[in-house]
Length: 492
Picture 1 (cartoon, rainbow, N blue to C red):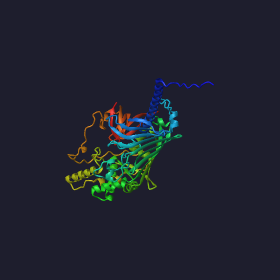
Picture 2 (tube, rainbow, N blue to C red; picture 1 turned 180 degrees about the horizontal axis):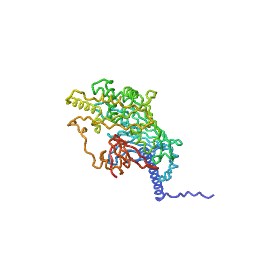
Picture 3 (cartoon, helix red, strand yellow; picture 1 turned 90 degrees about the vertical axis):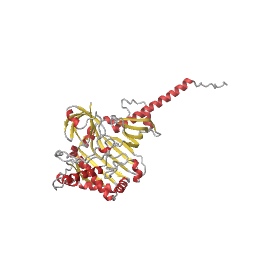
Picture 4 (cartoon, rainbow, N blue to C red; picture 1 turned 45 degrees about the vertical axis):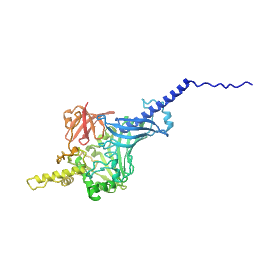
């Protein structure tokens, strides 16, 4: 019987190096796919912004994560938004393995859903909306409307105020979810601050072509409506107690201050809300709970101009709004009125402080008048505007009349030790509103309060609005930009 051979193939240095090289190549390829998927998800959520992240890799369930996510202002180089971690969901390991060697440049990686989470989000002190347009003006650390209005010494509350407010420590979480269902796109964007407040915006969009959620930023849709809901988790009552105690007044008196400040803000921007809806908001500002606003657009808004158009006064005529409170819904009417600019709104001073200065300036003017005729106060002006301005229920068949020119703000003298009260110089390359007048007929890069920039052709320049033309997918669109939305512009 022959002996069996016991010889073994020796492990050579070459085979070891080949195995190490294969593992390194597979790891590099996996890292490349992880970075690509996260980067594409960020583009879907935020558009073409300058962003950075590091250490992208897979979680145990096939989802992807990265550290130190930042959105950078390309003009100043400052960090606008930071998140400690960003997590992008995937359909799982089988999907990851199937797409590991798919060509990314041709967008052959297919998904029906993008779900992106930003953990422990922190925004720049001047950032009004961490979603850059989807949620609206909600503070990153609070997620509650008009969070500090009525407080004399607070411009916006932040995470550093949680302890003073008696609220638990929290790490804000921002979530973007895009789900394709046939020819519909379901969008949900939420900012959750556990133990403080949550704001959530949802909308249904009609897809005009395409079915890959990973390239939604290339696709056109139409938006027929949206719903914004705020769920208070303790912030409102904590805010009322804190600000009332700081001012030496009771909470009901502070709630009235809060409402006065909100109404004064609305007058500054030239809009008025009906009394029933304001009463509903007052109950929320007093008790917390849940407050919702349902908006229907007729006709539907194209996605290319959605953020610009829905913030313009002209869009009121194609909106139907309903406020929801305590499971009840009521028609909400927003009416364009004459703007009453509040001096100092370009500073970072609390609205209530500016109102006190305005009141003092009015009293000083009244004392200097030679005749005894009283100067109209802010309250009497507001009352006269409210009674004189017609209430329009959106939508309406006829085009609304253009708003009357804004009145000049009553200016109070700035304190010598108040640096924020004095308007400082600007970057000489930035063009302000008046500098755009000679550029009618030319192209400029326009920056708005939504945080983005768009190259537009300037068609008309008025005292309170611009008419522009932008090149979009499939053609051009003309729309208006209100002065309140305008930040600055740059020449090309």
